[in-house]
Each structure stands twice: as C-alpha cells, then as structure tokens.
Image (tube, rainbow, N blue to C red; front, side, top):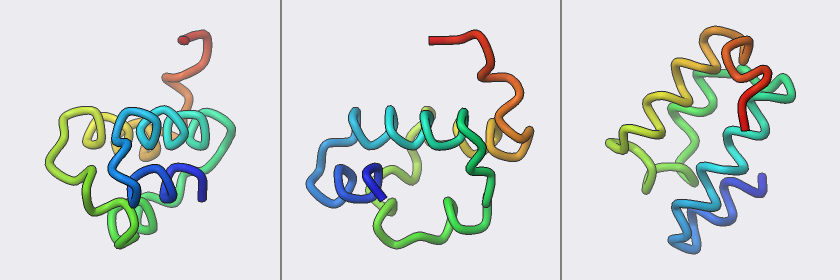
Length: 66
C-alpha cells in the first residue's frame, strides 16, 4: 500500500523501493502487482519489470541484497 501511495504521488523512486521491500518480505502476487491501477505509473520502467520477475521468483533473489 505504501508503494501504491508513492506511485500515485509520482514518487517513482520511493514506490519502487517500497515495492521491492514488499517482495523481499514475501509479497509475491504477480497478478496484483501487474494489474493494480495505483502502480500504472511504474509500468514500462526497467526497475518495475525486474521487480515483477523477482516476485515471480518468490523474492528469493533479493536475499542478502540492499
């Protein structure tokens, strides 16, 4: 929800950071990430596509990264 709020405000950097944090802590509903209208401003961004792939992997690749 925090990521959505930042995305709606146009703060894409913070939105991506909070989305990453959500995925790293277990949120892996790829369908929701891809279809949530609140995140539309992030679509087309390389970082967003990478986070979608990370969610598909279950967030496992994020362990140990900061």
